[in-house]
Image 1 (cartoon, rainbow, N blue to C red):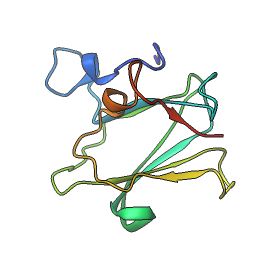
Image 2: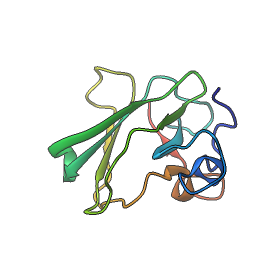
Image 3: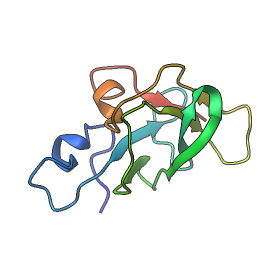
Length: 119
């Protein structure tokens, strides 16, 4: 069951931990003002920048704004996240211009850093 929005999910759910529930990608999305959770966001991982290349994974936020998957994902070559807000609203899309090499999103976008936010 989803819990603790905004905390570093992978601290407990990393594939190398003792947890029974292991994630390959996890994090939390807030609204643009970072004042409330965003329960209708979508995270997509592509092989190229700005949503280009092959779509590797799609993960949706739950009612607490948390997203997570245990699907096996190969980050070795780096993947480019795309964050969309309410599905179907093109203006609400953000692109990471640099590749990520793991799915621990809240390790960079968590309690002590710039949180993920979109409307």
